Structures are given as structure tokens and as C-alpha cells.
Amino acid sequence: MLPLSVIVLMLLTLGLLFPKEKEGAFSVIKHKQNAAFNIDLTESRDGKVFQEGETRKKRQNLIIVAHGRSGSTFLGNIFNHHPNVFYLFEPYQTVERLHGSVAPENQEYQEKAFQWMKSVFQCDFVTSDHVKDLEEYYRRKYAANYNPLKSLALLSPPFCPYNATDLRWKVGSCPPLDQKTLEETCKTKYSITVVKALFNRMPSKSLKQLLTICDTHQFDCKFLFLVRDPRAIIPSSNANSFFKDDTSLEGTRDFSQEICRTTEMNLNSNKTNRAVFRMYVVYTSDSNFWDAAGVWDRGGMSR
Image (cartoon, rainbow, N blue to C red; front, side, top):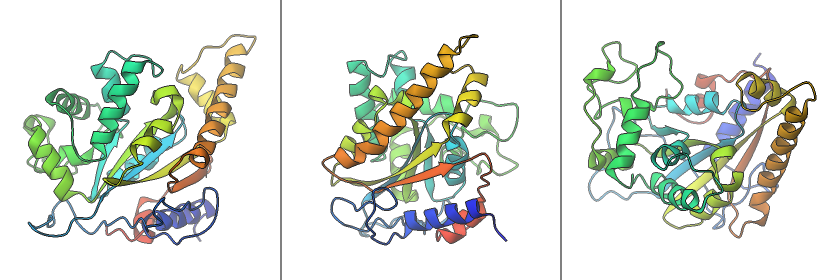
């Protein structure tokens, strides 16, 4: 029998793809236009693309939001491995790298981040510098074959001779990314964009900017909000030097208070936003085990 945590995630993913309207603060929140958000994942990397003159749906986006050390990398990588998903790992990092890692409260950072994230959700990639950053970041060589930071879409045809999962694939065989090809491929070959975004990289550590970007008729957004028990986040963050502490435990106290404050603020953000978006909240625990094949099957995704 499947563990309860696996069943819950399967049902969640089923709701993400084929939701039924239901009242509730966060389980299923009605889109501002009361339109069903059905993610079409019937195309594949190796299958057909949109034909000329074919009616094209709004671009669909799934945004995974979380604190660091919450399991967002693992969950994002499940979507990354589906052949119809254009996945980017923490696209806010592109803004940091191109603009000197300015603080999220900085006005320039806010403006550049707004421009970049809105463009990503439309499969537009702003400038050749942004495309070059994607190329350098996602094609770095790693010691192990498994690399959760990869965007498999950027490492597969037409950008590389072989799929990244093919044993013949080598990073050196992939030519430089071309902005025009990148944008056309994203728009025509992939039915959904999935990104992972951490609160500490968002302007003011808030969902407000993303909610504002998504308040548009140009594309659709859905949010997957991961919440992990702070008692698990804190030691994991400390082990990865996310904060400093001493015998007084002042660092632990300040970090835990900030985690809780930011979580509460962002959980309430969709209630106060003018346009209400679908936001799903997943409470994770160390006992969770997420089965990719089960998630895909229950969610209506072909393997």
C-alpha cells in the first residue's frame, strides 16, 4: 500500500492538472477569471509541435515557491524530468549574476527581476546576456551524472544532438544557445514552464512581485507553496552555513523568527492581492517520499 504522503502528493498533482473548483483558502483558489487551469502535457520533446495556424492556448506556468532546505529542488526535479516541461532552476539567480548580486531590497534588483521573470513566463529571454547566463549555468560540468540543477530542456534537442538522458550525451557536443531558437523552442515544443523560486531571492522576500507579474491576460500562473517544519529547516540551514550561530543561539533564534515571519506573510499574500490565483500549499516532512512515476500517472502525464 502506498504511504499516505505519496497519495497526498498524487492527489495534489491531479488537482494541479485537472482542478475542480472548490472553496478554500489554499487547497484550491479560484482564478481571477474562474477559468480552469488545465495544464496540457500532451506534447513531448520528441513529438509534434504546434502547427502553423493551430490555436495556441495561453502559456501556462507553475511556480514552486519555498524557503531553502524545504525539498523544492527535489520536487522541481520531478517536473524537470517530464518531457513536456521547460524547467528552470531558480531563475532569480540570473538577475543576481548579471547585476552583481545586489540585495533583494534594492530598487534596481526589483526592476531587473520583474523584467526577467515576466519574460521567462512568456518564453522570452530578454537579451543575449541572459541567454549566455543560462548556457553557462546549466551546462557546467559536475562530478556525478545526477545534477538537480540541470534544465533537461536546455540540454536536449534542438540545443544538443542527444537528450541529456542519452548515454551518448556530452556537454561539449552542445553548441552555444541561440536566443531566437531558445524562444521558439520554449513556445512551440513545451506546453508548460516550471520554475523554482526561493523567498530569500525575491524582492523583499515576498510573493508580491510574482503575483503582480501574473496579473495579466498574456499567460496563466499557478503556485505550489512548499512549507517544511522550521525545526527541520533550521539544522539543515545551519549545516549549510545559511546563518551563523554561537553558544547564545541568537543566530538560531533570529533565523527561525524570520522563517516563520516570511512564511506567514506569503501565505497571506494571496488573500490581500487584487487578483486571486490558484495557490496549493504542501506541508512536507522528512518522512515524505515522492514517487515521480506515480505523480505523473495520477496527474495525467504520459511517461
